[in-house]
Each structure stands twice: as structure tokens, then as C-alpha cells.
Length: 336
Image 1 (cartoon, rainbow, N blue to C red):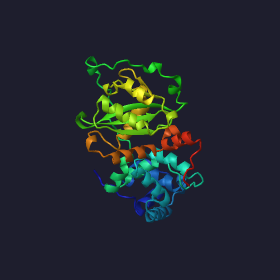
Image 2: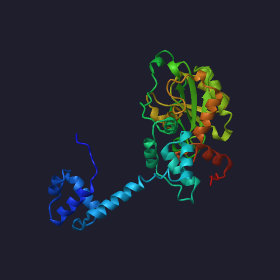
Image 3: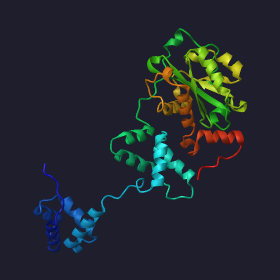
Image 4: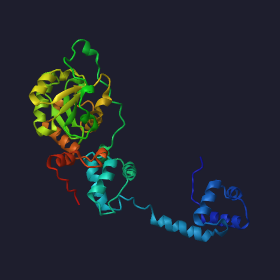
């Protein structure tokens, strides 16, 4: 393959002569041994009308552009914007979350505007190294779809007195009234450990529940203890899949006054909020994590980060902000 070389001043003079002689682009290109596209691009980029092409002017413009070098990107040319984007990427916010949230944090500062595509381009253009690795953590990596639970064990042990999701109050489906939750377990390495997850359907507030074991007794006790952090008026229902760890649901309801409803088998979309949130949680605790080795501090820190991330479905407010508004009736004052 022939190595590419830039057009020389002599090449441009030949192009200029060809234009004055009314030669075709193809004939000029053949004479200087260049692709026709190179000639046409050279002419149209240096003059609107091909009869007005001047070799000297084109050469001067090329040299000036070469001296200027590549223009710095929007992030590199704005230190305040760069600092904001980098800080949020380091806390696992996605580019879209950053791009939309910055409009709320800096409503009057038009220099603090950026598209999520620009952030992606900046990240992928960074040289390999620790900085790039750290900043890329917030990206939602391509992953296999979360598989439904295996239901074969129901033949051995069925959950008694199930109340179907079809009987759940209409207000829970509409997400208008807060206090309706979805729950699940994220299973750890070799299925020997787990982390409980609880998500409020209206505000997307997420509670992470450390578990000593993933049996029904520990799940019931741990979930009930975690719900004590939530005001009474925001604890109405819990929708769960049919995993046997919720087989003590009747006792759980007696203790917490939270009615448990069960999704249909093989129907993860009936708990879509929880399934989507579990995908976010995996950014902090990837598959293969042994939750027996994860400290309560690490779990609490991940919970705080999840609830401090702006969500598209909340118009880029955070779950914590929306929950605060519900509790106090006051709108959150954003940073300026």
C-alpha cells in the first residue's frame, strides 16, 4: 500500500493550472497521481467556486491550519466544566446523567452545557491509563440480560398464601402515591452470599440490605430492620418475585404492616424498577462479588451514591431529593 503524503505546493500549482485549462477533476488527479476525491476536496475546501482556486492561497491556508493544531475539545478548554464532569464520572454517574443534571445545577451559566455524546467522545479519546480506567467506571457496560430465577425448586417448597400482584392496589401501578416498594436479592459468588435490594417505585429511593445469610428468616429480619429507616406513611406494599427467601411474608407483614404481593413466575418486567436498579448496583458490586467480604460501610456508601445519582425518569433529580420533597413538602435548592 502506498503511503499517504500531503499535497505539496507543486501539486496545488498543477491543480490550479488544470482548473484554468478546464480539465476534469479526474484528469487533474491522474496527472498528479492522486485520488479524484483528494482533488475535489482540495478545491471545494479552498474556494466556493472551482474557477477561483489559487495554489498560493490554498498553501497558505493549509500552513496556518497546521500551525493552529487541533482545537481543544469542549471539556479540555473549560476547566470548570472538566472538573464537574470528572467528579461525577468518578462517582459512577453516566454521561447522560451528567449532561442533564448540569443544567439543573447551573441554570444561568451557559458555559456549563455539554452533551452526553461529547462526554463519550472525550472518554474514548483519552490515552490508556489509570485516569481513563477510573473515569470509565460510570459507563453502563454491555452485559447479558439478568436471567429470571430458576423455579424448579418450587416443586419442593412452595410459598404459602401468596397474594398475587394482580390484587395490588391500583395506586401502586400508577406511581402517583409513594410508599410502594419492590424487592429482590443480588446473589454473590457461587450463590453463597447475597445483598438485599429495596426500591421505592415513585422516587426510586434505594435501600441496600446486608444479609448474614439468604434464607427466609434472615431476609425477613433484615428487611424489617431496614424499613425502620422509612417514615410510616411511606411503607404500604412490597412487590417481590417468588423466591423462597420471602416465604415468611406473613410474619413480615405482621411485624411491619407492609403487605407483600408476588409477581407472576418468569415475569421480571412486573418488577422493572427493581430490575433496572439492580443493573446500577452491579456497577458497585460486579458479578462474582462475595458479599461476606463486603463491609457495611461499603454497602452504605454505595447506597448513598445510588440515591445521589440523577435519574432520567425523575427529570434528572436524584432519589434522595425527591424523597426529601415528599417528607418535607419543600423543593430542593440546587447547587449554584
